[in-house]
Image (cartoon, rainbow, N blue to C red):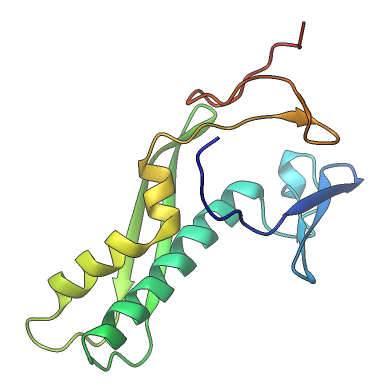
Length: 153
């Protein structure tokens, strides 16, 4: 595992059917599938949360970039839309709306892209390790493939 600061633990607990409650740092989010997909539509789908993470991270990164350049943007709105292909997004489009001062948009968007943790993670080659219970018993070594599914020897 790469050295670095770890995130807070994000814990998802099954409620009923496809509904789950996700807890992190004292906050809770209900996640579910739409009724048409077998859920009860009690909250956003996991893929919608992924898009929400990207849109919100880019929004905050853009605010950071504007502050760093001493540029006033007022309200910033970032819309993320994913195009599904099989069991993943084939592409994700971000649409940014803000009152960019003349000549500032390109530099601010570039700075935001550079410091957005979520877009950097999605664009990178991130391994996902699935472990049983106590974090000591690993199902598979970190991999750049979606998941390692083999059992330990």
